[in-house]
Image (tube, rainbow, N blue to C red; front, side, top):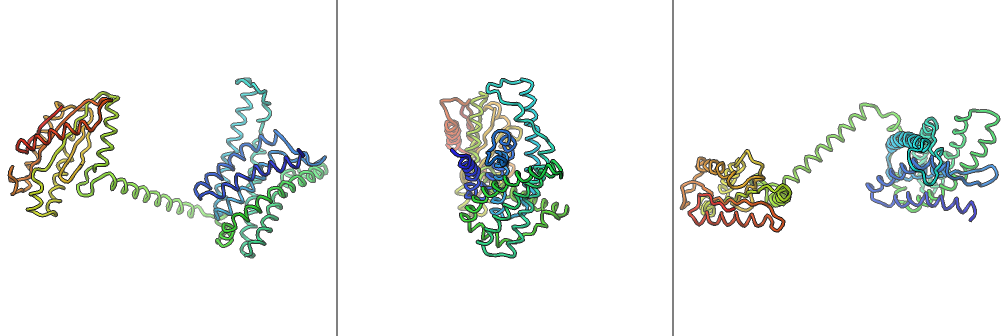
Length: 442
């Protein structure tokens, strides 16, 4: 295999992932691109020490340079796809965080390997992780500056030239120019201007030119594959001043809008939860909430061994009430009964629910009938004190309820349905015994 074929394979491998990520949905695309850019930043420093391609006697292209080229190419793709200049702000934060992570992580690995604190079966060279914070900072500043220059060129030229074909060529030339610029700036800043710098700069510039040409090809493929995104990018108004001159007040206002939007979203979600879990007429938990709570409580009871008690209540002769007073008054009656039902056994850990038309339930955790019944008998008297008129009731002249109570200790061979059947049987017996009474089963 020739060195140029190996270089081509490397470029293809570095390019295939961002090209694929560009095809994803916006949310997945953002997650994928920022994850890929982070990985490239982390491994870039290591690849520079691991291998290089010797293209000529004086031109070398390291794995770190390939990672740099891939980063710039991927950042351009993300910029075209997102069509937002504020992507620069996110890249700055990413560069700061990842470079700090690389420095601290590599320093720790260097210390660990040099002091033989771990087993090193493959004899990994500790110097592989020897990094310079100054070089990392310089690299990050150059990447940010170069990408800002690219953004400036892209925005200015798309305002002047509307033809996608010409812009593809122009953007590719701009990409090559900026990558080559890095080949000049980095050695000048690190070494300084001197006669010895000239051959180093020529060699470095030649390598960066080959690097830029290599990654400009997948960029052209990207422009062709995602022509629609490029057209939308061209037609989207942009101003670089949003990045450079955004005032603190403007940022605070934007944060305030986001916070308000988040708060509204949370409130809307809570409303949806309430609609799905609570009865709209009475405000009590609905059958769905009741079933979920019962399942969770039964599962907890299997572990704790504590008893569960279920109270079922049914408004006596409610059909007669509706027929005599009308459904609107019947709804108001149910609302008043629900208010009373909410206050049953206030000191207990329980859930009050409406499970049918005039049927109500209370599930009590960690209590048996003997512990619940005395307080329940006192509480149920308060319904008679409400004295809700019910002239057609054969039982009393006001609204009453029949109550069935059952308790059990959860068992693996049983289910909550068995407890419900016991309570329902007790309720049926209460109705058969003249109503307006409490019957228990355990």
